[in-house]
Amino acid sequence: MRFDKYTVFKDLNFKLKKGSMTALLGPNGTGKTTLINILMNMLTPSAGTFKFADAVRLGYVPQFRNIDAEYPLSIEAFIGLNAPVIKNSATKQAIKKQLEETNLYQIRNTRMGEASGGQKQRAYLAQALLDNPNVIILDEATASLDPMAKDELMKLIKHLNGKHKITVLFVTHDVSLARKYMQNYLYLNHGQIEQGEMSQFKEAYE
Ligand SMILES: Nc1ncnc2c1ncn2[C@@H]1O[C@H](COP(=O)(O)OP(=O)(O)OP(=O)(O)O)[C@@H](O)[C@H]1O
Image (tube, rainbow, N blue to C red; front, side):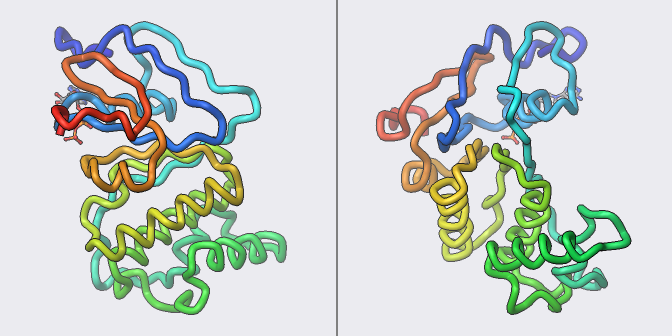
């Protein structure tokens, strides 16, 4: 990938296995978000190709951005933004299912502006899950959460992987969190990528 004369990375070669949980690690500015944008077809690579298996349905949870305290929509309505405005009973049922899946059902009427960071992030996740993805990409989903909210989100992601076999690609700077919850890593640095098992991830990278 090149921006004008600046090459962010080149000759990246990697595979993501169906059902795997992979942390995308690397120092600031090495191109993690750029790579995600390419995988999400939001950016066209300057050269090279990639391919997902035909059956792949991608879901995306964006980098956490705080929502204004005055934001008027409830958690339920926020999740429903990823559905037609006129909601038939199947859509309503699908929203209910994702509210339950992400432990938000009890607080579905809470305004997003009032929700905690962890609750907001789970609402973003529920919004993505509404498309019934079997691969989910999370960009720094835990970055601004407190330790308990981080663990809660990671346990939920692990559950989605274990129960629903959703393949996970998780961008993070948090190596210890990745060690605890992810099986594999992709390490992006100096324009190159390395792939391996999280348990083998070298301390020197940290
Ligand atoms: N649209 C763009 N035009 C020019 N340069 C860009 C553009 N997008 C990203 N870059 C550059 O590409 C490099 C990689 O940026 P990117 O945001 O992908 O890194 P990152 O690894 O996600 O960083 P961080 O860990 O800080 O989020 C940076 O040097 C950035 O300035």
